[in-house]
Image (cartoon, rainbow, N blue to C red; front, side):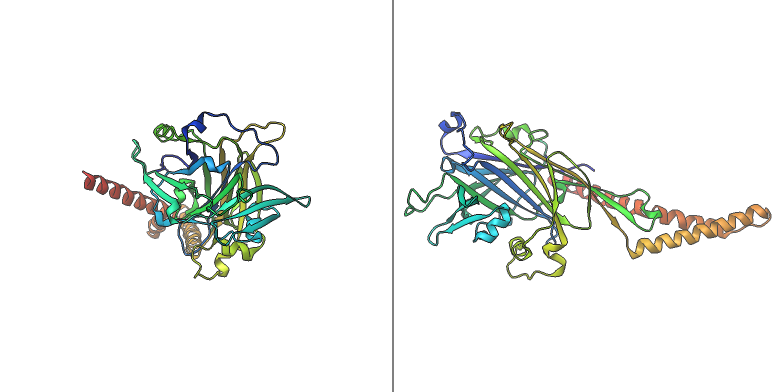
Length: 395
């Protein structure tokens, strides 16, 4: 299967306010500082939306030097499919669910932010500001790549503190979190089906998850070198990716940095968090309890304190599928093959006896065996003619 995307994943960088900052060395941070982090959540949840959606969270140290966070996406993105998640993180319970930590939350009614810190041994550590964004914070730019694949550059401008905020209330680190809806599954997923599925009553569907965060290999060079003011996070301490998918899938193999899977606790909090439309009720079919989260995390180690640069999320997922049509088809094939066997036996035992129905049985069996191939051929033909039509229209 040929991928129509320029690369499988996303690229996240900073745009600095002053070029002089780019030439300065990275600040040496202590354990008490809240270092830079990237959080990416891929949600494959049925919420009346045929596409998955993705949440991106960025923890930025010394955020007042940063003008914007730039995210390059290998598909065409509509601005209406982007919105802020800061409003959903409006209390200690929701923030604690996201970070999986005990937190202290201080909201400001007149401001566009809240101050948060983690609680460890009864003390507040690693304080940061949760910045809330609005529609004006997001802007998109379509990038024309030389290989004719679509690409969108999303710019997330960081808001400033309100003028009435004191110096003590301003924190060195800041966190933003936003959602991108209608993520094309083909960006990170390739599906395979069994070749002999027409001969069995159930089949195993397999897919490969390949999602890359800030991995430069395979990314068009023109995308990386187009703007000298864009730099990767200099003090990146952790990259975290969480894939949430239906629980009847089995993860049979994974790549490096895989941390395991778990169900999402605090179902009421997560159900409200994942809703894209507040008017839609949570039903049994789309409740978070029917899903599992698989986690990959690359982070610094104390014995090797080098900054993290990228993360590859790679896994093989399998699921057995069976339906009324496949069961009936299997039963018909068994009956036909049985009848054919009896006919062949009669023919061999009595050379003068000619069973005219043997040819009919054989034809029906072959059609049933290759019906999946006929469907695949039909889909391929439709795609081929659509591409040819689009090329003619462009000319």
